[in-house]
Length: 128
Image 1 (cartoon, rainbow, N blue to C red):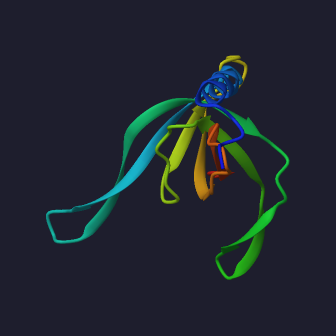
Image 2 (cartoon, rainbow, N blue to C red):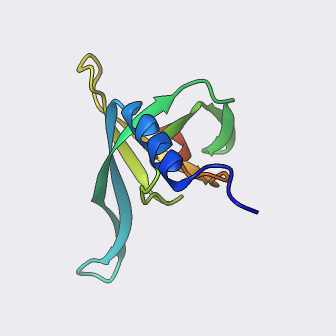
């Protein structure tokens, strides 16, 4: 069975999707470093920067804070189709409009791709 979309059509769709990514996201990945006394310290290194878009309005989920459950508003982050993003990463979004300050988000999970990979989607939650 031949694919529904030709390779050229897929390239065109990826271009259209990329044009709808007005902001930028610096992807940070954790690394663990052993300090002078043998303890482990987590550090974050920026591994890539991509064009992005945040889509608000995800259903709130919950997280444990102290010994209680607190609501957490999540959003969908869209990145180019070839972006490298993992569930343990975090991102700092810089907004193109300049009217808002950069904001940090933890990656809650990366959404599995659909039949035609046009963009990478992830659920993110704003860091406090």
